Amino acid sequence: MSQLRKVALVGNPNAGKSALFNKLTGARQKIANYPGVTVERKAGRIVLPSGEPVELVDLPGAYAFDASSPDEEVTRQVVHGEFPGEAAPGVLVIVLDAANLEQHLVFAQEVIALGRPVVIALNMVDLAERDGVLLDADALSQSLGVPVVSTVAVRRRGIEPLLEAIGEAFARTEPVEERPHLDITERRLEAKAIARAAILSRSARHRIESGLDRVLLHPWLGPPILFGLLFVIFQAVFSWATPFADALDGAIGGLSNWVVATFPSGLIRDFVTEGALAGVGSVIVFLPQIVILFAFILVMEASGYMARAAFLMDRLMQGVGLSGRSFIPLLSSFACAIPGIMATRSIADPKDRLTTILIAPMMTCSARLPVYAVIIAAFIPQTTVGGGIGLQGLVLFALYVSGILGAMVVALVLRRSVTAGAASGFIMELPRYQWPHPGDLLIGLWQRAWVFLRRAGTIIFTATVVLWILLSFPQAEPGESQLDASIAGHVATGLNTVLEPIGFNREISLALIPAMAAREVAVASLATTYAVDAPDEEAEATGLASTLSQRWSLPTALAFLAWFVFAPQCLSTIAVARRETNGWKWPAFMLAYLFGLAYLFAGITYWSAVALGL
Image (cartoon, rainbow, N blue to C red; front, top):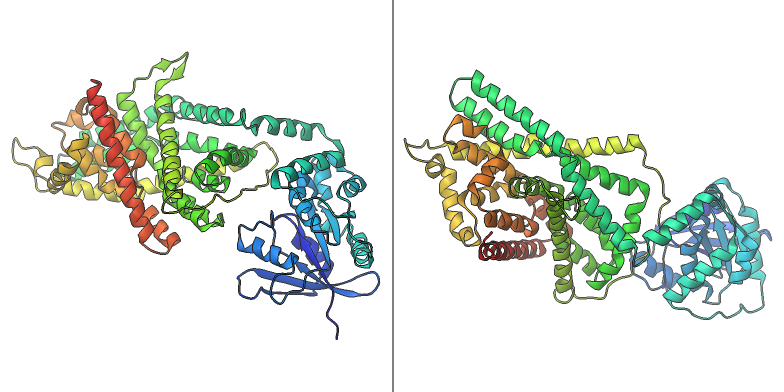
C-alpha cells in the first residue's frame, strides 16, 4: 500500500491551527509524541476534492525556523524533511491570524522562501472584521505569490475552498518562483508593507489604536512614557493613600487605648496591645498603599498596555543579555517573587530562565512596601519639590528604580559569567486596547487585599506572637530594659556585632530574623519590640513612624532602606527557587550574593550619609 502524501499546517501560536485541523479532519486524527521528544504530534486524514486521501499534520506553533524551543525545533525539522522517520510535507498550509496579519507574515515569508508548494489560510477573518479591518485576499495573494483562502475555522467557513487549493498545489507542476531570503529586520519591514497593501478599509477605532501604538511603542517616546507612568503611580501610592492609612492607624490606636483603659494590667493586656495590635496593626495600616498599587497594575494589564511595556523593555533586556520574555516574570515579581519565579517556565532558553530566577527577588515586591512606607513616613518630610512633586513619592520611586537597575547590573554580570550565553529572541502578540471592566478590577483588588490580610492574620500574627514571647521573658528587673533582659535581646545583641558596622542597632538586627518569614514582618517586629520596651503606657500608643524618627538617625534609616532593596525575600521564595532549579546550588548562590549586596550597599549608604553630615 502506497504511503499517503502529506500536508502540514504551520504558523505562529494562536493562529487557529488547531481549530482548522479539527474542522478538516473531524474524528479522523491521531495524537502521539514525536519520537525522542515530549512534543505532541497531531495527525489526521483529509480527502481532497479529487477523492485522494492525504495525511494532515498540525505542527507546533513557531515564530521562526531559528528555533528557541523544542516545539520550534520539531517544526523546523519536519518542514525541512530532517526529522527521523518523517517524510517532508508535499504542501505547506500557512495559517495566518487575520487580526494580527503583520506579525504572522514575518514567519510566513520565511516559509514561502523555501520554494515549496504553499497555500495561505487567512484565518479568523471574522475577528478582523469585528475589529474594523477588511482584508483583500486577492491583493495578499498577489503580494506573496501564493494562493490565499479566507477561512473562519470555528464556523467551517472556507473549508471547501481550502481543500481545493491544497489539491491544486499538489497538482501544480511548474516550479515555484524563487524568492530572496531576507533577514528578520527585512522580513518585518516587508510584512508591514504587505499587510498595509492587503487592507481595504479600517475602522476609526483601529486607526486610533494604530496611532497609539506608534507613540507608545516608539523606541524614543515609549520608554519616557512608561517611566512617567510609573512615577505617577508611586506618587499616587503616597498621596492618595494617606487619608485612608491615617484613618486605619487612628482606629488601631483607639482600639489599643480602649484595651489599656478596659483591661487590668498583666500579660493578657500586654499581649493584645504590644503583640497583636502593635505588631499586626502596624502592617495593616499599609493596606491602602497595597490596594492603590495593584489598582494601577490591574488597569495596565486589562487595558493591554502591560504587553506593550514588555516590548519596550526588550531593548533594555537585550542590553544585559536577556530578552523581553523575562519582563513578564520580573513584572510579576513586583507583586510577589513566587509567581514571578514560576512564570519563568515560559522562557525556553535555560540560561535566560536561570538568570531571571536569580534576579527576580531584586524586584520590589508588595511585601517591601510597608517597610519602605514606614521609613519614608518617619524620615522624609511631606513636602513637594520641582513644582508640586511629592518628595515621599519621589523617594519611593527611587527605591523601586534602584531595585530594577540593580537587577539589570546583576543580570549583566551573570550573563557574562556563570550563566553566559547569547540573548534569545522575543516575539509577542499584542492584545487589543480595551477599557478595563470595573467588576473585574474590583474582584482583582479584593483578591489581592485578601491575600495581604490573610498574611497579616497568619504569618505576621504568628511571627509577632513568637517575638513577643521572646521579648517578654524573662521579665526585667526594676530599672533594667526589658529588651536587655529578654531572650530576644540576647539574640539581637549577638547578631548586632555583625550588623553594627553598617549602622544597624539591636532592634533592627532582631527584626531581620522574623522578616525572613515575610518582608513586612520587619515592620511588625519593630513595632512589637518598641512597644514591649516602652517605658510607659503613653509610649505604647505612639505610632511606629514617630518612634523611629525619635530613636533612629537618618543614616541608619537610609541604610535600612538600602538593605531591603537588595536583601533576599521570604523563605517561601527560596523554596520555590529550589524547586524550579531542581536543587539547592542556585538558591544558595542567590542567598549569598543578595545578602552580600545588601550588606555592602547598606554600609556604603550609612557611611556616605555620615560623611555628608545627614
